[in-house]
Length: 164
Image (cartoon, rainbow, N blue to C red; front, side):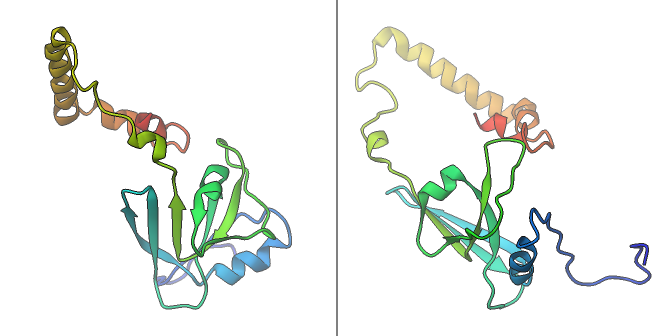
């Protein structure tokens, strides 16, 4: 009983940080729902659909944790588990438990639809400069690893900074 395995293991080990005694029952309830894959669809009207695949056909929904900005966008059947104590990660505020084998998040894209990439008739003196900048950026992404290093730092906090 010292935690060492004495024979080959086949299966899943599920770990969870229990924030409060009442959380154990909720976490154990969802434990059979093991996430093994997911698909993302993005529709032009701002609807994002995450479809999660479980290891086996179990009648339990997958339990995820969502930030407040995710929760505000949730539509569809995913439900916030209000009886589960929120997690406090190192950044971006509390995360609440959400149960669901799919998430739908609706983003209001009405303002962005009115934006263009460039002015309809850019000043002729700027066109070459814009082409040069666009080509330089393309070359940076195609032939440099610097952007990968900025995005994949192996840290919960810093990895996402490359997207900004």
